[in-house]
Amino acid sequence: MSIQQAYELAKQQFADFDIDTEAAMTLLDQLPVSIHCWQGDDVGGFEQLGGDLTGGIQATGNYPGKAKTPSELRADLDLAISLIPGAKRLNLHASYLEAESKIERNEVKPEHFKNWVEWAKQNQMGLDFNPTYFSHPLSAEATLSHPNKDIRNFWIEHGKASRKISEYFGKELGTASVMNIWIPDGSKDLVIDKAAPRQRLVESLDEIIKEKIDPKYHLDAVESKLFGIGLESYTVGSNEFYVAYATSRKTALCLDAGHYHPTETISDKISAVMPFVEHLLLHVSRPVRWDSDHVVLLDDETQAIANEIIRNKLFNRVHIGLDFFDASINRIAAWVIGTRNMKKALLKALLEPITALRQAEEKRDFTTRLALLEEEKSLPWQAVWNIYCERHNVPVGSRWLADIRHYENNVLNQR
Ligand SMILES: C[C@H](O)[C@H](O)[C@@H](O)C(=O)CO
Ligand SMILES: [Mn+2]
Image: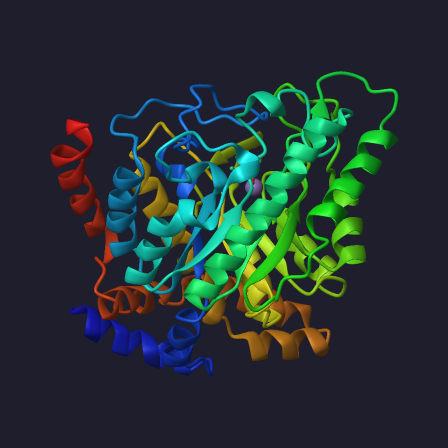
């Protein structure tokens, strides 16, 4: 049976549940997923500071062919995006700048990202941004909460400089760049004064976001964390800290799927915070026992995240980003698997019999609700996904893997 024939049958089956598959695909086209550049080179960046990845995060594995230059990373991204259907954005860190000589973090400028902007224009993609508060000699103890004023100021300047870059992205590309602040500040062991670093962090953040920037071009977001490696006992920017900060300062809040206790899920947090924040940034990730940043699967939590976005029509308020870095498998395949999974989850969410489910719940008919939730799992969503891929000229099913293997043999293995 052809992809078209399978789709025609599926379309009818969904129509029996009052679900319009064409409308679902049209809406899916309007939901970009922001692909994180740092999966391509194990969060290395191009500053060539010569140091290790620090800040309590780790990319484990040594798969051959890691991108070592901006051009290599862009070539790898070219392949990845050619295998992922629909709207995409690229999420950059400040450490992915390009310059002839060494640029200090507090001196990063839009011009250091002009090649990325050109690339984004060519690919009709928006860009998002992150100041980089790790992998730097001055981040060894702390950054925005550092007790030393000079070090704190250095990082405040980095935050301000980064906002200019983010604004430049928004102006050049005609779509607001979401700039996410994550800092690794914390402590391995017991802390007596937990209040002072948090007070300093409030003041540093307030200083960074003091200048108003048109939200047409730039949005500020803040990301909390539970703990990092070597920072197990105390995290300055904890969940409560940033929920309070984002709501009081009206910034966006970032929820990273790996940044909570193992039984907590960010899917459940979305409806809890949306009455209080205008914009939410998601770092969809897969924590395995800890914030391991494994590649996103089409698993229950990814699906639950997508369902929350679609059921609550949060299309313009939730910004979907990815955050994983696996160096043990082909890095381009990691991008493709994780991003396609996020998009599959969104499509499945768009194909839910939502009206019937809501009606059952309103009538307190929980039997029908559970029955429908289970039945929807075996509706032929995959036939819709296949036609969606075909219409976007990307490989159907696992055919994309052949393209990656070809590139691996001809490009990655020659690096
Ligand atoms: C590289 C990212 O900024 C980083 O992963 C951050 O978002 C995070 O989640 C740290 O654990
Ligand atoms: Mn994150």
